[in-house]
Length: 202
Image (cartoon, rainbow, N blue to C red; front, side, top):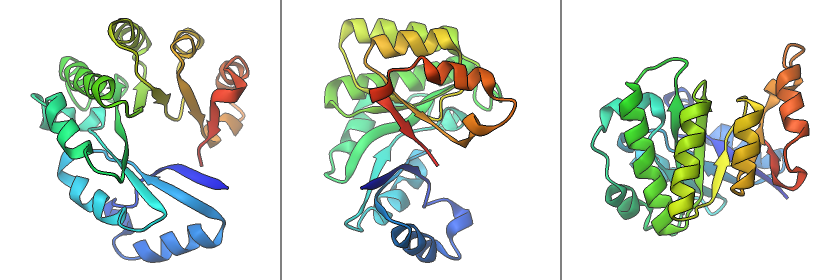
């Protein structure tokens, strides 16, 4: 069975042919899809797509959008996640490459997602870019207080974060970036990941 663990079918670029895109995925053998949330304002559209029996969804706020909900509470996420079609929290995390939201706000919003994951038991879909130090610190300190499940999505960060996240039981998804000629450093990190906790992301 093929499962696409990270789709963004609610994105506006699919407005003209969303159903055709879904139909092509099914025809290609994708048995299940997880539609990933990037902001709370689009969660209703995300959840509506998950009415299909083979599509599930998450609820969360991407670090780029954290500035829009600086006071996000774990309770807000938990209330939205109290839905049988919601199977994860995120995509959330830290992105210090683009800095589209202030770093302190990114961290605060990420902490709310971690707390919701700890309380709900739902896995956390983590985005991390050029934030290895703070990401490692936040994951380890929170995990020491109360364990939670996590997937480090489209992993391109360094080996130290990968090693320490793996020690916390993290899963990793790797994408086509690993096939780029210039991505030998990414491939080296992947080779050291636990083989039974790697999933392929298209």
